[in-house]
Length: 115
Length: 112
Image 1 (cartoon, each protein chain N blue to C red):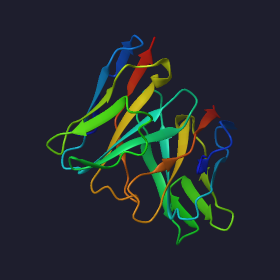
Image 2 (image 1 turned 180 degrees about the vertical axis):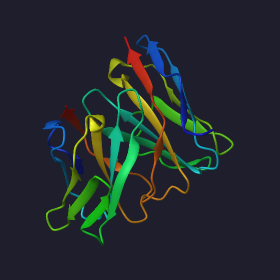
Image 3 (image 1 turned 45 degrees about the horizontal axis):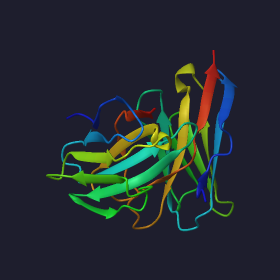
């Protein structure tokens, strides 16, 4: 596609439920990133994929968070047993090679609200 | 511990005047810096970048200045336009790094 696509754009869930957030990166981009932005905060790194592998998962806040990438393309971020503090905008980004000096192209994000 | 800080959460400027957004960092390994702009309900978009071998990079109305000794960079927008109203994020990366570390953002409001 022309840009990074994320779905759903908005998700409201009840505390304790599981949610899945989807990211479709720019075609051909090997690197994929998940960030989140909590209210009034900056962008917090969650996980980085190079192809289907995740060499850097250091930003995942707890074992309730997991992510996978299949076919070197689509990625899914799963949050189990959601908590209210998980409420945030979850942003996906992709880049050609995954080098720090590269521009990241971001999707519009998924606004997650945990009630 | 925040490695990239934007100490001003908001800035209001009159149209046509200069906007100066500031960013400080603590990690001396950072060698590449970027600014992103974010409109509501959209993802951040790349604006301008600078390598640590330079102290200035200019692109049209946007100029980024880097002061390595002070671990400080700034983004200048001249002249400011109402369409520049957005949240601006400073970001940094280290050599061989594969991710960007972002600051907390500064909301710029340009008044007509």
